[in-house]
Length: 121
Image (tube, rainbow, N blue to C red; front, side, top):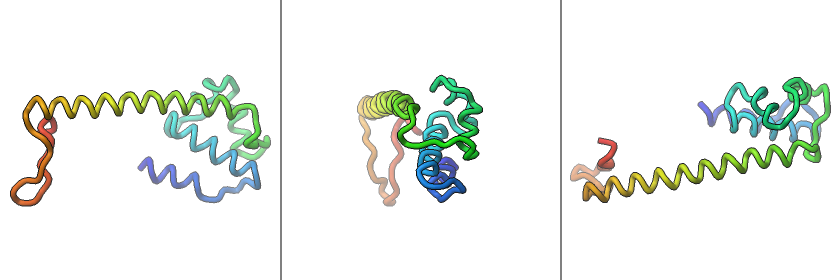
């Protein structure tokens, strides 16, 4: 479901020119950071009003890739990237440790199917 929602942001929109690109990136960043209800929390993180974001989305106010909000958007994404990287590393380490402790590794079962990890049984 998430991938389908993200794919929708890459399709053409009703906005024109640079505004279209900026609106698509803002929408994608907002959705990635906060899910379907992203406007209010992203506005709070950026220190702007939700109506300002809504005006950009509606094309009432121009938004370009040179706008002052982009360093803050990038910083928000970078923060999530660091958090997700840390969670990914810790999850991999925990799975590896659990399988080593059990003396098992993922392998093929005799019937050719993939043997599930020990901690998932």
